[in-house]
Length: 243
Image 1 (cartoon, rainbow, N blue to C red):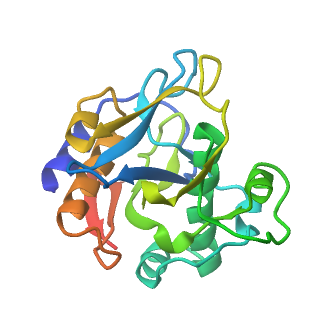
Image 2 (image 1 turned 90 degrees about the horizontal axis):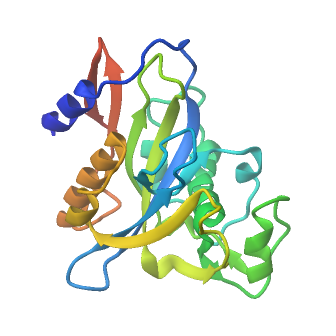
């Protein structure tokens, strides 16, 4: 997909900012494969936001300290865990696991969807958003997450992220908390769209890239053993490597 790297390189953005260190972040693509055409869940960001106003995005955000402490129903697939640790300073399975949990937590905070398994008893959970999982008796099921792509925002952008995009089948939705999406929320609406139609929406470029990679992955069987691409800028050009 060298055309993808070329498309990323051509994106014109303000590069006058200080060169910030990228922050660890995670994004989750919920995909419904129950019908003949797979559909993905996109949210439209509020028009008044300073960052990516009005864009369609997947839920996601920064990794938080509590994400390292959340108990789970099952751990990451071994392939995903290994790839998440490649090319990372002080790599650990604990951090890889926390990134996956960050994607699940952010999805709840932005959409109200709790992804995981219902259980009879919940062990203690970190304070804050994770309490909603305890209240609903849902534990995150990391084995269901697929690691799709990693991408680092180029230097001298106003915000920089070292983002990991995960995907999970919609069958992992265990519960929904109402009131998270609306006219006064970060996401004003949610839509389920076929991948091809989703790519025609007003998306950040990296979201388009993630959809390209997801579409290719689904076509190859959506297996955990498929490689995860890594996009970053080297010598003023985006390059694509496989983890």
